[in-house]
Length: 307
Image (cartoon, rainbow, N blue to C red):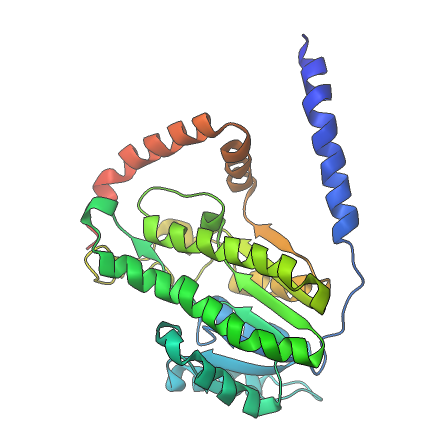
């Protein structure tokens, strides 16, 4: 069989699926002006960029985070650049690790503007370390912030969205929610669970006019790696070169806003190489496993001690 025949057998169905996906995902643009958006992790990085982007779109923004001082600094920055006919952002103190009290946090958030139209689940914590050297309490912390805190927030907001007739829920995941790489076990596991939850949620609320989107970025220029937790519970406190050269938060925030405007379901914001590896994981898993084994060996010295 010639290569041309192989391409015809494999390439044509894949091409048709790609075109079909574009047709299904094409929707009319939604006007966001006046919509109430709650953004977690709003004090820095991508969350801060989302605050500015949705504020510019005319949304009424609720900035959620743990540190009031940092949130207020972001609020003042936004107000200085505030355009006519826009609303000043409001602050909501929220700790995702305290997810058992999420009902109280959401109740306070609802009192600010009366409802929540858009929820941006952005807050998260990263991890660096080797599985054999990682304490279980570290896995619990990462899962608490990246998964349990996120889904607790969704479960409290969901009934209000159903009652008001719809809304949008965006989960900011990661490429590592699609593929797992060495020395990121706790983070990748939390993001895989995150992806599965949101995929299920999308199906279950499809008849309630509630839009659900998972955004899976590659590396972004934020302090995520610096604040990453190590296997012994300490802070990584280093800026990875991949993070330093990653995408600008503002560009990612604009893409998230676009995903809400056009009610997109799942978007991957990553270089071609990352997308190719995702395809290899699906189509040729044995090759993917070999690549990851090589990556684990080459990175063992660097990650054996997260200090």
